[in-house]
Structures are given as C-alpha cells and as structure tokens.
Amino acid sequence: MAVRPLLRMGDARLLEVAAPVADPTAPAIRELIADMFDTMAAAGGVGLAAPQIGVGLQVVIFGFEKSERYPDAEAVPSTILINPLVTPLSEDEELGWEGCLSVPGLRGEVPRCRSVRYQGVDPAGNAIDRTVAGFHARVVQHECDHLIGVLYPMRVRDLRRFGFTEVLFPELGGAPDAGES
Ligand code: NI
Image 1 (cartoon, helix red, strand yellow):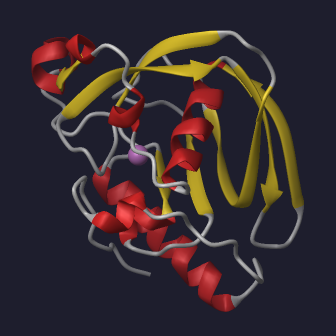
Image 2 (image 1 turned 180 degrees about the vertical axis):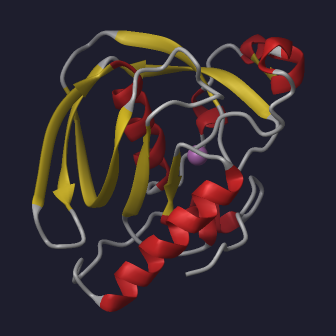
C-alpha cells in the first residue's frame, strides 16, 4: 500500500482511453485499489480513477460519509467499480460545481445527467448495478470520464464559471485543493 503521485492536467496519460481489466480479482488489481484508496485519502478526495495515478485501467473508486469540501452533498457509499458502464436515464441535466485532484486549486460548473444507471464489477467479481441521481450520479460520471480521457474542464460550458476555489468559495476556509475526484 502506498500513496502514489497524482498526474495533473497537461499530462498526456490523462487523455488516454483506459483498458478493461481482464481479471478483476487478480492480486495486482487489489494492490492497485489499495494504492488508490491511500492516494485518495492522502489528498482528501471523494473519488479517484486509476489513470490519475498513471494506470490505464478501468478502475474507479469513490464515496464518502461527509465531505468538508462538499458540505451540502448527501453521503455516497464507498464503492470500487471495475469495468464500468454508465447509462444516462434522463435527458435532464443539472449544473454543479466539481473539482479534480488532477486539476488542483480549481473548480468549475459542469452539466451532468441528473440520473444514471451504472454497472460493473467489484474486486470479488460481484456484479454492481445501481440507479442513482444527484451528487452520486455526478461523482460516477466524473470518475468514469477519466476512463475515456475526459477531464471536467473539457465539459465546462461557461468558462466564466471556472476558477480558483479559494476565490470562488472563500467560505470553505481555503480548503486548498477542494473538490476532488
Ligand atoms: Ni477527477
């Protein structure tokens, strides 16, 4: 288990499409996931995708009980999702603020589908199949975007709603790299 360096926007590896995991139960995948949790915790994030630590595989983790950085967000169960498939369930889009550990210090307002179904497997090989909405749906869409080489600033429509966290949200007490997934 180890905290791994986080790639930051500008690194070409963040723009690659991640490969499916052949064997989700493999020991190497368990080690990867342990490193991802260590790295996410050290950075105070609410989600992380494997490409953010330079591993081009379809593995994402997310979840929190209560986030200082998203004080109004409902809890999201701690989840390990391998080989995900995300299906939009509504045409409704919702705007919301996002940050990313690969884009430190910034936040932007991003349109996301309000409700999605996501499927995949966990590291025991069990199927995951959930229908979610709101912030949970937002986090899943943000993380799975990392697997197709998309960072949230690429989805910001109004760049006037993109800026430094401590300027946009001084009330967060300068939580430095707020966000973040
Ligand atoms: Ni991110």
